[in-house]
Image (cartoon, rainbow, N blue to C red; front, side, top):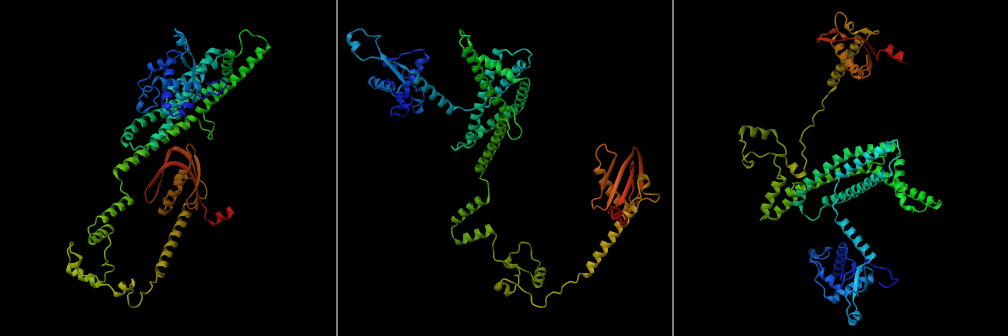
Length: 539
């Protein structure tokens, strides 16, 4: 790279020999891990991998070993892009000719190292299979429990202990959130598979459902515990904890040998910046586990719902696969199969027979049966298996075959007179209404009476007793638990009953034509709401 030019450490990714450049950089990255700073071209050839360390070649095989001249050209090109830096190799010069001959040693630059790290991170993110970390939930709960001890302590919190707890908590929470997001993305890809590997998918789904179900249960339990710990820490003044962590982080912002006012101002500014950062991290942790009303559910709840939806989608996908394998019979499938049968019919006669068998269509021979035909069939006494061709045919009118309608000749039927039936129904309705009115009159009380005195010495009339059971059931159903009084209206709105319990241990009996009614003693008042006096009073 010439002086003043802009480094382009990613330029080799678009070059024709990207496989060669990537392998060369992989050799330098491996050498850096071994704390080897400089490499000569012959060192690169010695360390040339048998298998591609970066996996850029097909099937993981290493590119062919380049000749020394091509390797030097590749190294110089990487120097031009800024991935490598070259220096004169004077370590093995023994003659003037060796000094005049161009010899170089190479090492990775900061730009080259950053490009390799970025590409490694990119490839790891693409190939990452997220996992639902139940262990991370337990670690977060443990860290919050330890942080609660510092928050509730009467003494100022220990800056080192609080800072370490918050740092560990942030690391575990970040890993949990990233892995959960990656897992849900991979789950959607697993459900929406397109490679047709149905057998592998069906074998995989049982373990996946069990895995998700276990995480959902643990997230529900641990999530509630973590949410409770967060609220307790906030109630114990979370600002004090975050300020202690911020002061610990801000120590490095001020040089130790400066104690003037400028240093104090710099320290205060650093504390303010660090405190704001910790407040944002704590807010993210809170919003992940604690819901804010119904409009902003927590991310843990959203993740739980997404996992449940993932199981539902997974089960639906399995059901669709099973239906596809089993060849579920539906109308479209039946019609397609019938079309194939028609296409395979040897002749028209076979196609006509298939048509009649499939749709049960045949010439109509029994649209109507007259009395003459019935007499013939009854006299002949045909057995059940008699073919239609051997039986007496059905006689129909030629008009039916010609016009499609059949009209019997002769005078039309006389209209039936139903006046007598209507009068009978009206009389029956009036009689029932009168009986119900009489029952209401007999059942209505002039005021509150005891249940034992309701029937009188002769007992209750049968109709009055049945009406009483109806309104009594409405009153008992309306009474609240523990209440001794109740008021209810019958379903038709004609009667009102008021009950008051006198003695639950005292049982009384009411004699009727249907039997004996027994129960606790009550004060009963039954009002006929249809009576004229009652209507006038109500008005």
